[in-house]
Image (cartoon, rainbow, N blue to C red; front, side, top):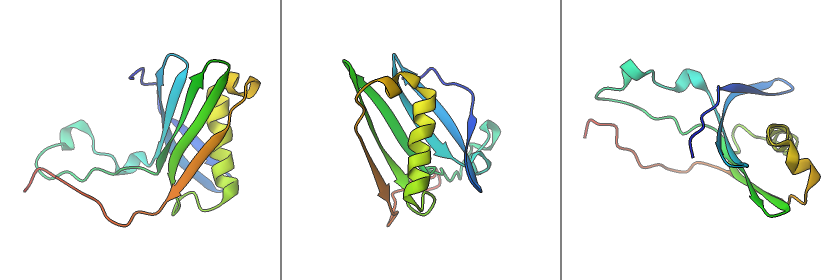
Length: 121
């Protein structure tokens, strides 16, 4: 599931973040993140902290319908309006979704802990 497109910006009112799109056939996944927190290739040695980003949204086509799902960090996507803007963003990237039945379920998550291996231990 590669077809990695150029990074773009997601903007809503005073909020902005980077977004990457990954596609397979008509289906797509959008990753929301801050590119300033990502390591460059020459920085990936020994101790690396991998930023998980702000979440993902997915459009999966099933015949004449589409399903939209995903997880968004509630510390970043703080309001229903911001989540709705993210849904509209993915609909603009996949315009055929506007012409079919497309229910969605977006979960806002709160990070409580994480597992990590950073190359040091």
